[in-house]
View: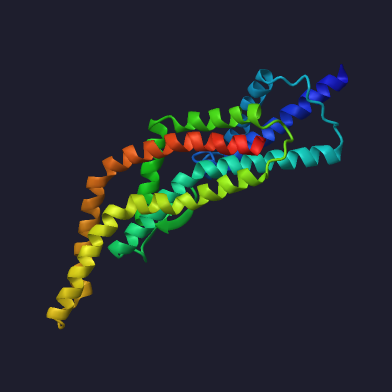
Length: 258
């Protein structure tokens, strides 16, 4: 009886390690503004519920220090990979904001991110907060919990995760950050290409004019006006990305469990 209780505790603890690792790197839950006590409490509840839903009769783990460290490390790595993959869309929005901010001449301007307590590009922060709001509207936090709970049915506890197919899929996800950023920033970047072209023509026609000081306020105004028009489009774009990423994440989880 005692051995059964110890084995159940070890299994629940390993489940907890994977979930808390996901929460440490996933969007919303991974922000510093999300209290650590709340993360631990929520991860503990989900771990216990997950334990009750899994068939743990065939899982036997020797409760010695080496086994706990070995299996625990695998669960943490699995959780970190899943959580980081979920965050890639938000990295794409932040990178797009940096590209747009550079075109607007705001590359030297920075704003405090209250969620991460760091300074970053102003437009990047606007797009990041916008993405977080849309994430809540489409119940993205439910998607995170659903993905991590489903991972236990595909990737058994202690399963080796760093397989070559999983590594290839993860690299493709990481590279997609640049693709997402360019797709988001392309309407503004194309518009500013025409603005810069007009700047060059004016500089050749009227060399005495201080082009930078004349056009800088104009570029900021044009950039903000363009953002007002494209933000509704970004909402549908973000929703489509998250839906495609849900399927892609399950492909990654299946590759990690193969």
